[in-house]
Length: 431
Image 1 (cartoon, one colour):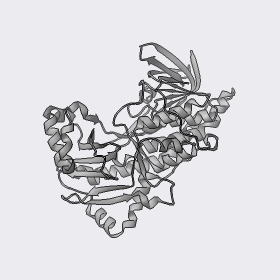
Image 2: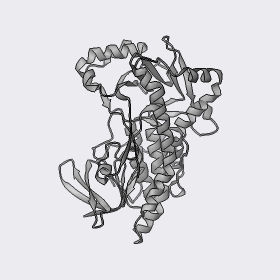
Image 3: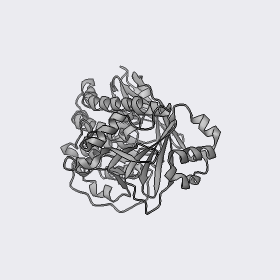
Image 4: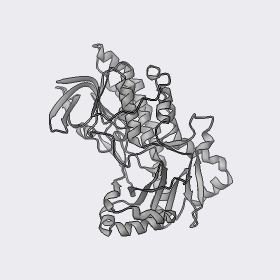
């Protein structure tokens, strides 16, 4: 029987940040990631100002800056058929309030590799790749006492843990095994992700939504390509795939005429990845021995691109509140209590509700009318306000880039700037 103090299920941003912070507190932590590497397309790749600040506090700012990235300082909407963009969120206005008044677009696998390398420098950190959690271990009193897993070779195993933290996303196996009650909100849309070529001379610096009849799009400038989100009514995946790639190219060309000259780069619908959009929240984020964070606790709509930032903030709050109880347990003291676990939910509930309320408003005010063909732009009152009082663009910029309760690295996790590490081969297991 393997044993650890804290078992983190899922090696995404929340899981890796939590593992690194707890390890820096001297807590024995094991992160389990079911894939052999982090190389998957169309994960959320936005790194927001508060997360950029966190990386600096952790001493990882220089390493992050060395990663290939592009920077977005505005969020806008088209307001006419000529493609005029109205900036409704200007992150440049955050200068002086945050150290990084922009969103960095970085392949998520690069960010996760950076966090994994930093974790590997801590003696109490273990990252197990190709290890899929298949169930929860239970004690005689019903409390979660760890996880059951299976390796890529099909070998089963178990890890006993004083605390298990589910950071395995909206389809969380750990959350499902805990039987926690979910509050669901209706979502009018799904998203289909793909990429198109971006010429080296292209200077686009804004994340720009596009609008056509019955559908929306978002074009995100990345290093060497555009990452494109095609947004249509929920439940249309089978229909779009049945129509085929030529019809899909025509839809994209109508939605984004400036990209029509490169839609032929899409050769098959296999290159178009479907995201089933969900918006939900757990009523309780824990049971005895188990805590849920990030999308496992509150699945977010992609509207605003804030899901990753919110998950990272959850992880920082959890490490801040639970490091001492886990250290106590490691020394032979009492286990982490339900009240201590619920403290994380209480601390992060208001920011979560605020973001989900904003997303639900955007679904009603923009997404539903557009997908129904009743509107071709943001509400008129929003347009008039942004045009007449440009300073108001700081409000959505702040909500997107910072949020209601930004979290900062606890003192035990802070480090002086760490030099850029030499590139090395990817590894399947870091300990």
